[in-house]
Image (cartoon, rainbow, N blue to C red; front, top):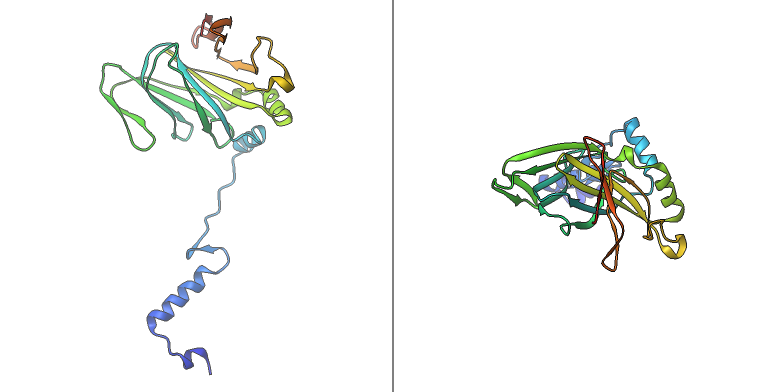
Length: 228
């Protein structure tokens, strides 16, 4: 005699047991088969190898002028950074970020006319509305040197991705923060090694500028110095 003959099952009970059996089948979760992830493109495979061990880092963002209604997006159109206003020299953001391949492939920055009406909205705080007066896209991942990444894998250190907003487009910089106890000081007296990119902030100690900052004009290539 079967269990069903000993304890008759109602139609609803049978359906419930059937659905439970389907959910427990290999390859199923919650009654739905898992969707296989598409293979990475050759470009993404190369980025995964290049940035292995790096999932993000410290993020620094500032501007050479008073920028209003700033949004920065990654290559997937996801909001990477947003700020209603940045004003030099003290208007600087310090925080952290995460990225699929260590750093974004590209970053697209847009900002707004300060006389127009815009607002922050949504969970991510993106700037909406207003009149967009600039829209620039720049490469990031392809510019990070392999030597810096190899040094980090061997000896550790904190990767810093730096963005400076110029009227003609965002400037990208980077460096590696290393302990002075194990790696000594950088040539400029700071603990930041392997600086590179379009700009470097000034090194200021006890209120004194020990090394001037600099940036490269995104259109002319001319180099300018700064005290911050």
